[in-house]
Length: 121
Image (tube, rainbow, N blue to C red; front, side, top):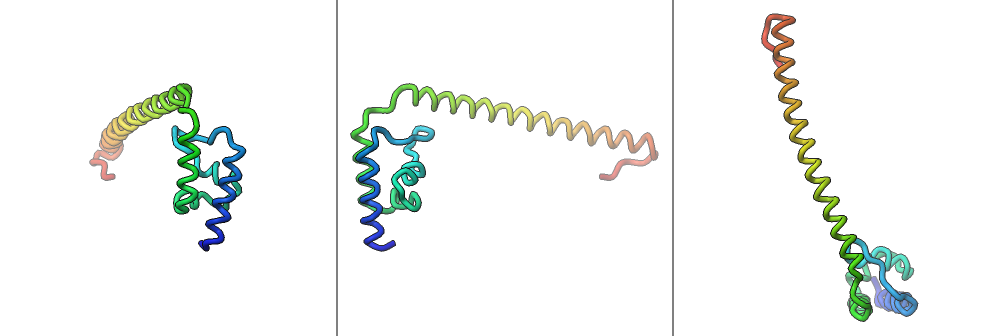
């Protein structure tokens, strides 16, 4: 990236922030993809690599009032939903393993009944 591109990105970000009252967040973190898109940047990389853009964004974010408690509640609800899904996933995995074990046992018994020989998977 050239110095000109860096300056252009910095100007675009400044212009975007001049009109912004708040910044987009996702899962409690700044949504840099949305910020870059809204600011007209080609991608979000300047928000990570361009020192001026990083500093400007951090300063603007620090000036904003603290995130509301509803955002914290939303994060908590998301975390709770993730935990519940992980628990359900673990239960289904255990049930699946038990059913596979039972199926293998039944296939062995079926093989003995039908052929009189042991089942060879």
